[in-house]
Length: 131
Image (cartoon, rainbow, N blue to C red):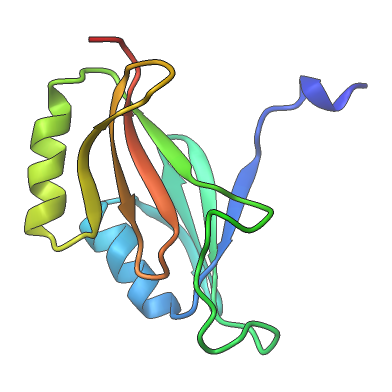
């Protein structure tokens, strides 16, 4: 078998404070929790499992996400209706979620909103159709 024949099983994100991350992902973004055990929280993000891994002694106290280090740059959620971005932006702003407002991808000209979790992990709400 070739690895390309397998679907994505899950994504794991290391967070500095699991309770704070849970509040953000479950209460603010409304991703349903699948399983909670000490030090881990599994979420259903539109059919993809995202595991939040709590703080670890190997993680520096002040460590923050950076899209400029080798590894994850960002995660993007597909938004089928570009007009919905306005409503989503308003929701993020009212919830106090740091974001850059509505942006346009230079390559595809698709509109999107980039926003950040409490550890600075970058997410996008990306319109899947062109204007």
